[in-house]
Every structure is written in C-alpha cells, then in structure tokens.
Image (cartoon, rainbow, N blue to C red):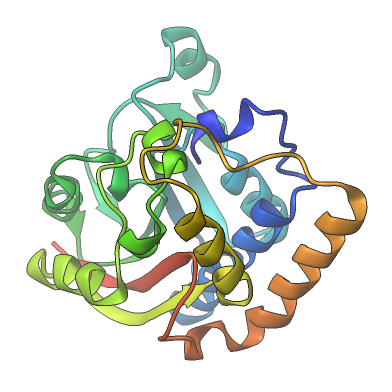
Length: 242
C-alpha cells in the first residue's frame, strides 16, 4: 500500500477503502489454498506498511507458510528485525518463487516500465504460481491525487489484460471494484481542474460517511467479478509459470 495515503491521518483498520479492498484479496487466497491444499507463500511486492498482509495473516489461519513484504524503502534494521518470522521484510524479491501468491496492490502504476517487474517475477518463478493485482482505473479519473502519489498511469481492464498477456500471465478474472462510487468520483474529478494541486484524496471520514461507504462496497463485493464496466480500481487474478 502507498505510505503517502496514510500521511493525512487515515487509519486503515477503520477506513472504508482499506477495509473493503482487503476482502477480494482474502477471498482469492482462500480459493487458491482450497485448490493447492497446502500452505502458501505470499509475496507482497511494494508492500509499504504491510497492512494488507497483516490483515490477511489474521484472516486465513493455517493457510500461509511465509509472507514476504518486498519494498525498497525498508531499512537494514527493519529487515534484520523481521528475520525468522512468518512475515519477513526484504528489499528484493525472493530468489525462487514457488507455490506462491504474488500480490501487487496498487504498484504497477508507480513503475515507469511496468512490464519489467512482471518479467522479473516470472523469471524467478518455478512451476505454477498465482497473482492478485490491483491498479487505479481509467485515465479519465486522473487528478492531483495521481500526481501526489507519483503515478505514471491509470489502467482500463483492456490495457491491464494486454500488459499481463504480453508478459505471459494467464488472466482468470479481470474486473472493476468500487463501481458503486464510480459516478461520484468521476463527476468530482471532471469538475476539478486537471492541473489542480497535487494532493491526496484519501482523508479520514466521519463515522456516518465511513459506515455508508463501507456498506456500499460490501454490497458490491459478492457481484464484483461481474463488473466489467466501471470502477475506481481494476483487479486482475490468475496464474503464471516460470
């Protein structure tokens, strides 16, 4: 997750955005475990605070063998302190990726050459592995928020599919999430000047607003894979082999 989004005081353990965004990931890991029937290695690329992985660990007991938080921003002290634990911090990908779920939650948009990361992951893969990827959707939603977070681009389902297929990733499910709030977000970002000040749209929400938005997203969850039309986030799930 992007650490910049937390600088405004957002608590991901309570905020509607993070609490709803973790659910498709948890569901995907559970489904993958039921398929392979052995504990999985989770590799969270661009993990930042590691929020989603700590939430995942508590949600799928017994399904995980090891979690690697991969982020170039970790200090030597953070890396050393996490050794020999279930959740280990590292600045580079594991040498071998096997029986793994590779997670990239809003990472590819930060990379000038997004395909290079996908290729590097694939080169280290042994046998069949799984991926769960989220990216911000639609260039029509581009705003100062993207500039603030240092994004290079936003994606459509078709552009994300094209990227993954070019890197020989097999897409199983590709869909939009946060479709329920898309019209409001689209309208606000059309009204705002495209050259508006770089700033985060992620702010702490009042109790009532937070509860309402989380309820809307939870209602959407069971039907998310049917949404091929529009949303604030695009999600891809599938497999890849070395």
